[in-house]
Length: 116
Length: 112
Image 1: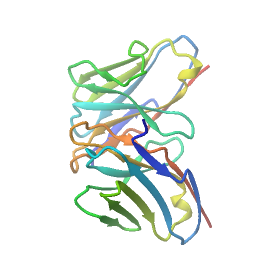
Image 2 (image 1 turned 60 degrees about the horizontal axis):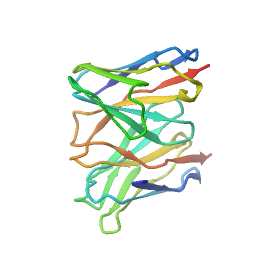
Image 3 (image 1 turned 135 degrees about the vertical axis):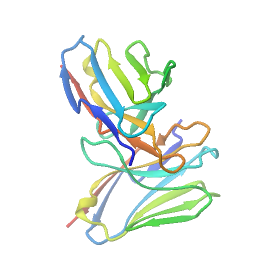
Image 4 (image 1 turned 30 degrees about the horizontal axis):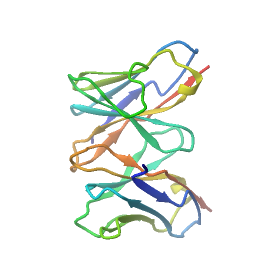
């Protein structure tokens, strides 16, 4: 089945530094990648949608200059958290429309970001 | 605006019992309704999904019931097991929007 590989699974960084999270579609081509953020005991909130070869679409309230999304190829999408602050600490998850039934989605395993 | 409302927030069920989680949606353009299971520190995993042209779908111990007129759908977990203890999310999307909108989640604990 369709697999999205997400790395790293955990990262701790100092306040003010940048962190890059990668999501790769291993056995299919993902023209679209959704990026979610999940705070403890809360639901997944869509941050942005990346499309291969074009600019990402950000949800209302999400700072596009802080959360840089690049979708350079059909198998790789990256999210860079720039100038990270403790309030950016969260669980970040990517998801791609899968190759299964119409509307199916494949999720990455998530990245736990802790900013100290 | 919360487009998918999920209840209860948490649920405790005895082993062997039936776990029932409910969701209601507002957007009539939604035409895909999946349920996801999430364990701590992991990404969501698809359990089962339904489209509005059927009222029920069953896969193993998991059943979705769908009521289009009421704009509600529910997940039933039969013969609940301790290994089912996790957070469950309902979601919805439309083919046009292609974005998944998630419910708030239900923390299920199955007591052995």
